[in-house]
Length: 420
Ligand SMILES: Cc1cc2nc3c(=O)[nH]c(=O)nc-3n(C[C@H](O)[C@H](O)[C@H](O)COP(=O)(O)OP(=O)(O)OC[C@H]3O[C@@H](n4cnc5c(N)ncnc54)[C@H](O)[C@@H]3O)c2cc1C
Image (cartoon, rainbow, N blue to C red; front, side, top):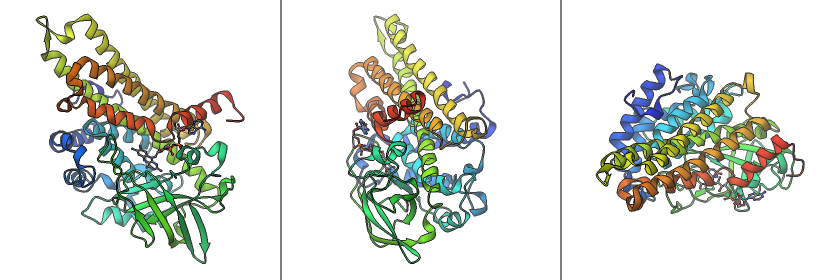
């Protein structure tokens, strides 16, 4: 072993990866894991959660990751390994706490539109980078897509072209005026500092040119973030309603303009599917817990792992982790090599991203349930943290359009379906 666990060893791991993994792992083992059992009760106040974010995002600097170096960041969005690096960072953070991983990943998700090659918007990077760089407080981005009438429809661009979006953006001189109501964005509930808002410039239109992705600093007059939802898990990720009432922002806060906003919004979705790694990190930790439990607990005088029936189940679980990781890193390779696999916004890449995230979340949930069964009643005992990972992985299975949209985008590409 390399001091991590067997699943953190990648054939291709670089010295930089090993080094940064270790940094995140030290933070996870010393700061998060000893406290994480208290996170469920901390869902509203973030008394324990916020100091942990401060260390990760500010002291260790991870909130700068996607911002180009010329604006003070780490230029991850300009590298050829954006998705792969995201995968192993997400694994490490979510091994400790997947809500924290989701909030961390979304912290700079809005920068995908403007900080990733080949479509860097330097003016907007210069405008928003200082919020993340010149600060000693954790700073959070959020991407506001989902609306009360249905989140999947908004992500279902190939069929609906944005027709159901109700949040409107109207040009008034040199300002966009935004009105609407969003639900669920990660890092809301009072947390968000910068919002990327999916709007329509022509309600009811299915012309993708009318989809606009507009940046809104969260302290702009007319923006109201609601109280965080009390969820089954993932307390470190606050989600809430968010209302926009005659919110005025400069016209150049639109990411790229007609047509290109919709195109690159697809890339926000495909890179978002690296959330497959949000299920793998918890399973890496489930493995550690299982190893410990099955080595120490004896049955009929022998460690649990030495019993045929249990060993068979253990092998199923590690098979799930190995294969899910292989699928996730394959997706990362597809996203990192547009020269080989085509642009990140193509129907092919979208289908492969959706099916990977769906497969991995389903398999990890299934394996986490097996782990609970092996622990017997201890599996339901909070002290062992398995039930925590189980609740969190379940939530990860639900977001980003849900199962049916993943299936439709997959069938559409592989079977050339015309009416889905
Ligand atoms: C932890 C968490 C974090 C989240 N973070 C964000 C975020 O950062 N930004 C954001 O905007 N949203 C976020 N969401 C919201 C999430 O992405 C949506 O909940 C999701 O896209 C599904 O949308 P919905 O809940 O409106 O369900 P709906 O779209 O209304 O779907 C309801 C049901 O119908 C199914 N369905 C949908 N379309 C079809 C169809 N055409 N045919 C058959 N069945 C269908 C769905 O699978 C589901 O079972 C988050 C949610 C969670 C739980």
